[in-house]
Image (cartoon, rainbow, N blue to C red):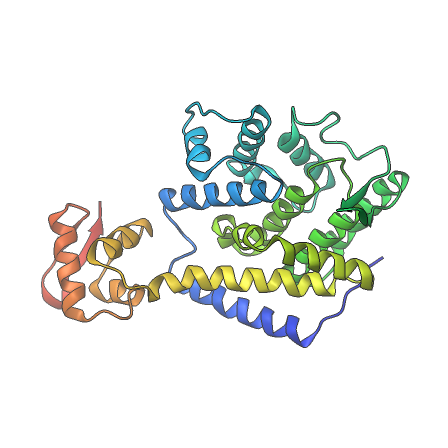
Length: 317
């Protein structure tokens, strides 16, 4: 059965906005970040997603663990990060439409943190906020078939991925199939669903915005619970995604110095380019500034120059 939700005017506007921004991302080559940029965004994603769950490690400590260095911190927090690093370094190993892959991801994510990682819960659970039960999950006997239905929706629905990813995220949180790790699994699986259609989502740490406004995240979940539809959560998540892509695009609107521009352009890994290509990325600089930047980049041995005047081509080293 199709999970209940409505397509509101707000959802339609957000889908249009996101689609336009993804087009701009692709046009500006921002969908092909360098290994350095990928690493930075991966660290932000892991830090933000685990921070929501109470992990205390900093971005600096996560960076150290990513570089196989030792850090001082709670054993549980360190293990959570190491498991998450393993997941996010191997995202291509998971199939977002496959339930067995979903269970494998939970096992990898929660290995050593809970018993029976990678298996659906075998007891009833509820989420308590203060002195009140905020959410009473469906009986554990129902979990298996509810998740099968959800994966069937994911496989067979002709709804666009932007909506399907939000619906899956909400419905999975509502079913609460695991004793622990549901939140991080919901965010991970939404990323995987979106990545299949839009590769940029592998490097777009929208968890940062969720982490900064956790109350809004939980409020959207609660409002959808109360209404019996995921509509409010879809609106919330699409807004988070829209803002995240805007922040990526707004990089070009910051006041950048020569070094900033060169570092960023090199990170795009565009192997061959012209001054015009450079100016297409940094739209607010003059042709004279672009020429000075490229001259400096050549002097710094970032790329080499071939040809003269309007036939000049630059080759990234």
